[in-house]
Image (cartoon, rainbow, N blue to C red):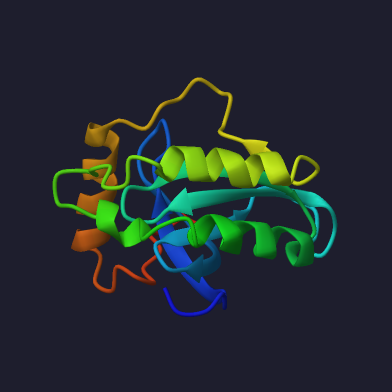
Length: 149
């Protein structure tokens, strides 16, 4: 991955009621989206998402200026695009989870860890996200009617 520059972007996410999109920032194979209704410049919550599967990687709390460097550090943990397969995802780096946890541990005031809702994104959820993304006219930027934040 070259650089740590986040670019504005829209990406698909896996939700319990089906795929949806979020507008936010993209770096490598990860997307960062604002979760709250506060202004992004204020301390608020963000979700770091694996774009290939739509799976949430972790939640972060803070201003956009505080959150982006931590999310970029997570992006540098590995090549997150290696997960992007037609049938879901495949773990290609057995140490990726340990690297992620190490980053989260280094930033306890910002990193909130995985979503604790109990919702686990399955390979079937990822396939639905991938199918929706691939069916969109311009999958990288497409937002379905009524979708996205």
